Length: 372
Image 1: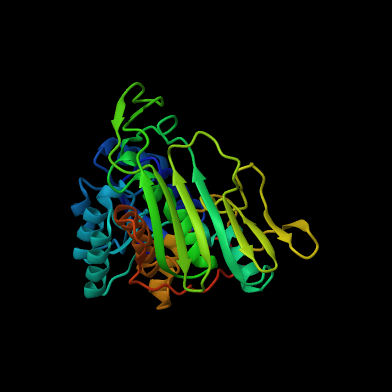
Image 2: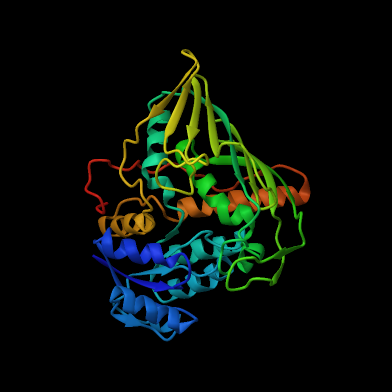
């Protein structure tokens, strides 16, 4: 049993709070804090949380806390995670690890210096959908991976998100916000990335909020919102990745992986199960020999929204002394991929990565739900 303290009780915190109390019983939530104290107090009331802290430093000073769950805005991740590490706490952060590569490098170096673990989201790749796809690839069902195509295209978040401004600031944008789901998925089914090439633009200089409570307010866009990139993997596979907040509609499936024996239609990596953008729930393989598409049953646990799964895995890894599936080895590699895409877009040249990533063990489908 490891004790958790949450910094930031905003929009994403609801599913973490639910799963901490209802699914992952090997973790214990000790307390919460938020810049808007009313949010923390509401969470305390709704979930019978023992403590509400005046600020994050009071939380970090609590000797009962083992792991800090950092659910702040992307541009705040570095400051919060650094302070937690300096206070001697392990950290699990929402994505991305940092708003730029330098922040990620400093956090990883600090964690190593302190003998601590820093890891983070996304953990959707641990769910039934992506784990089923990984097994199909590793079992040779699709043959050798040639390449693939990934598309995350929408017209932004201001029509539905209650506080959308940060999506268009440093550390936001479609690549840093949604890219981690796709890149983490790719590295876990294909392997590490060795080089990237990118193109980026900002199509709209401002955004009009049409969602409550900020209806009618104008957002100034300070980050690229349409990024096309090409990822070359250690295996030689090449995958294109489009992330955009500038596209009204597309019929492109979320993820297609091309193998020497056929094509694997991978579900949306923003979800744990088999959801694809048509609304269906499946993993589908198009067999090149039979010329037929076959729906593949999900063969792993966690098909529902299981956010906190990655935190539970990291906590168990710390306790057991094993490698974790969501540690900085993964989150830093993903951050470097994204930073390198943006650097390539600025310079017009491909960028070779410095970090290397080897996949950790797949999930064990025989364990009870909530046990890692």
